[in-house]
Length: 261
Image (cartoon, rainbow, N blue to C red; front, side, top):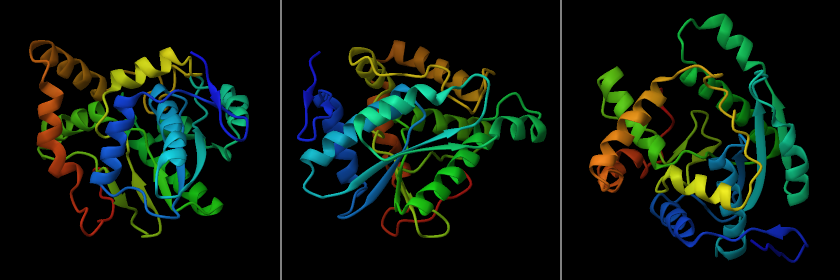
């Protein structure tokens, strides 16, 4: 599909209207973007974060509230993950880009014996991203979790922890100086996959440093939900409605992150 250049000459990808509507609604419902925000997008190189990158770029042009956008990638130094393809791609977009290298892989192998490193890695990656945001003067961190991720987290919390909880769509970190937003909260994973394929985005398929090629509880939950959705195509529509109060827990006072997130 032909790309239209913006005023700076940087190619502009077409914006899928359904994704645009859902992201716009999430931003409004959870009050994610404030005037003058400097947003740092966590870019793993996967389909979700790459799609969110282009959605936020489009929002910059169309949104009535002005905000700045930068991008950061955490390299966990896993043999399964190579972020080098992102360097020329980000240079072509002309967006401030930060590649943060942290030996999460070796630390996970040393300190954890479980077959899944998801929670450990996610926390370490967020810590690296927080430091990058503070160093570079960003006050908001944008993460690429979508509705499927929220649903999987909910059922994992019930099955493994006996709690009815999921990730938050918008919250403030413990130190109080950064906010975290998840604009894809109403979007389905398959929508990001379709967009990435149609636009030939430079997806890094071994892009999850949380599992390093090992099976995870999240993958088991993904398969379970896929089986249920095959029986009832309305499943995720109903789950979104049911999870909405949990997604926005503490939104009025913008509560701090907790151990679950």
